[in-house]
Length: 117
Length: 118
Image (tube, rainbow over all chains, first blue to last red; front, side, top):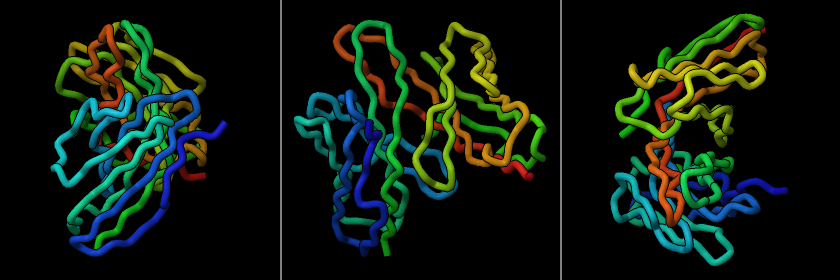
């Protein structure tokens, strides 16, 4: 049973360019969240997708956008790249539930390391 | 912004010793989780403690939660070289909803870098 898969694993871009990162969630999961992790820091929440809609968003500018497809896979797009966008981008999947049951435990992919020159 | 503050930022111990990491947070929570990360790779979930629990065990892991002090600790007993990693606490403020789980928005601390020397 495959876990969360992300692609590409590494990429290098220059300032002003655009990048698309891809994520396939763990089998059985329907919610995808994206996190940005700068070197030496903890992951910071970018946004979350469920039922092909952005459900929650962190404190990130509109340059960061995403999409979820009917098969639950997701893309993260970043436009007009800045040097400060260099980071490890982590995709995490989880399973929704109704009511008060169920804990919000995330399964993470190995990440896509973006370097902006 | 990050809610969790972890202490210490770095910890170096010998194999066989116990390692204790602390986490403080700012707002009320639904649960608190600990994750482990090896060498800048993906995070792996270790243990979850709900807001109405005070202590939880899983193998060599022991987690405590003090909601009055808004703090948690992670104890790893009889550490091994393979425990070398960064450890993060993450808080979940999610209020349960009838329609769908608003899960996914975990707020992570800055992490404790643990080094276990053989």
